[in-house]
Amino acid sequence: MSEPEIEAEIRRDTVWQRPSWKLGERHGPIPGMRDPFGLYNGKEHSDGARHSNGHARGRESEAAVRVASARAQALDVFDIEPPFTPVRLKARYKMLVKEHHPDAHGGDKAAEEKLKIINQAYATLKASYFN
Image 1 (tube, rainbow, N blue to C red):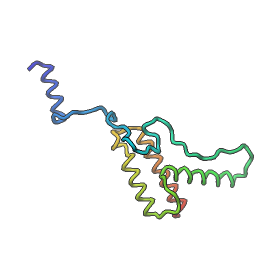
Image 2 (image 1 turned 135 degrees about the horizontal axis):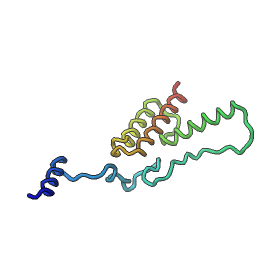
Image 3 (image 1 turned 120 degrees about the vertical axis):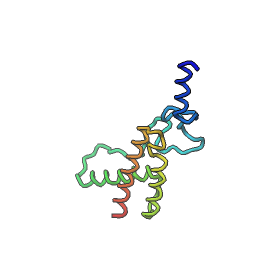
Image 4 (image 1 turned 30 degrees about the vertical axis):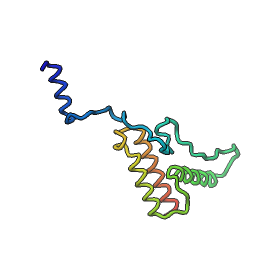
């Protein structure tokens, strides 16, 4: 064997003679799969929240709008309608974490960001409805 052939054989042995791919290269949308976070189309998730019409509001009403908006965004992330139980919320959270965990996507930074959004949404819903 020549030196390049030996090098190639050693490289194949590091992965037990199995093919390998670059991180994230094999992940893509599954046909018919919902993509609520826009991971595969490159678009940001639109929350459908209404924007202010420019009128002045008091601090209390602005805070109430932010809380309502945060709840609405969290409900959109979880794709869940109230009323729901803590058990149902936790089950949906676990499913989303398994689906969007960075380790399941080859360490993809976008998946990491989506997981952060999921964690924040879970904390928001848990605090809004069960505390």
